[in-house]
Image (cartoon, rainbow, N blue to C red; front, side, top):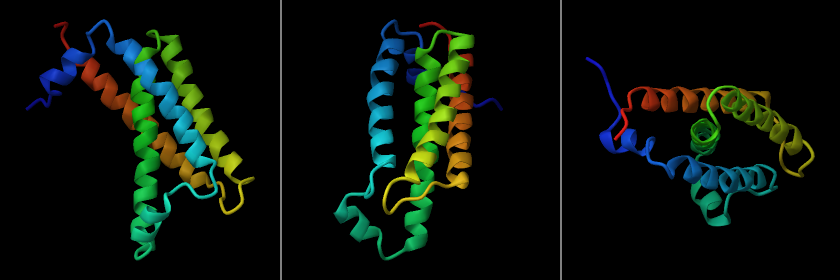
Length: 142
């Protein structure tokens, strides 16, 4: 049995505007993500209070957010970057961004950089690329 992406997702990749839309979403999302990663208190106070009952839950959600956002960024980058070498450059940029933000966190009061977070970021990037390639591969022009 072959699993294929939903039709509406597959057809999006062949819309003329989709690559531009991916770029328009990518840059503000990357900017927002960088800002939150380098902020001393990245969670809103109310959300932090709601999650304070379980440090394990907060840790799991934070790591899933790391992987998820980098996965989305990788998928967007893979879509908007011209095929071939430029896609690899865009993914390489995200890989370096993951390292850079963790280094940057070592200079932020109350934060610390973590090699584990870098590996989680990279896992998210890999998943984002694999899922995007899977969707594109199974897509047929609409």
